[in-house]
Image 1: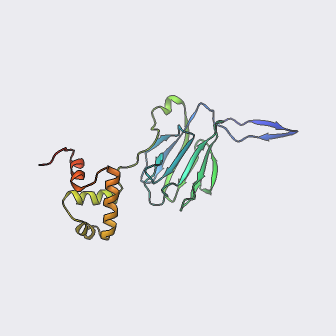
Image 2 (image 1 turned 45 degrees about the vertical axis):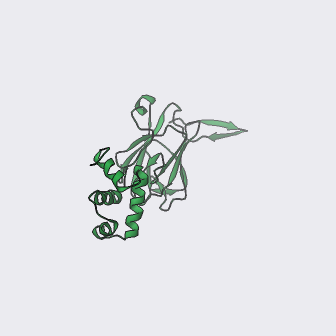
Image 3 (image 1 turned 90 degrees about the vertical axis):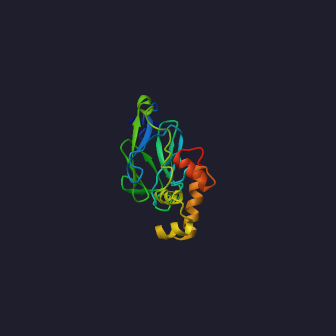
Length: 198
């Protein structure tokens, strides 16, 4: 890290610790359901959350849909900004609304999703993803989809999983949206990898 000072009037002012501008920040998820995901923060503004539109998708019930932003200044300063998440952001165990991040810092999103901050050379960063896709379906959506392709109706699925029919309908809608299908037959074709079923 570079520690810089400049003079303002007659006062010597400390600048924040800066990472070299040619280094690419990344986060490596080290705890939670998305453990193992490593994402290069190539853009100056990266969103983190449970929502599919986020750059870094963390599948964790304690993570908000749009939980936080990671922002990088032109000088190389990386900062975390909490986007009014329900369960907060923590840097090295301390709850923060915003914080400058350094190599090796541990960010906790919500209660269990943790990521380590790092800085890589451009060559090292080339091997990292520019975003995480997250899993295609949540665990519950996968359970519902499995029952659907077995030919079970919503009422039977609800009874089998111990959830309401309305909840099953919500999951079915989510499955269709995530997978880009509009019927159970299309879902079956997609999951079986066939274009036609006789």
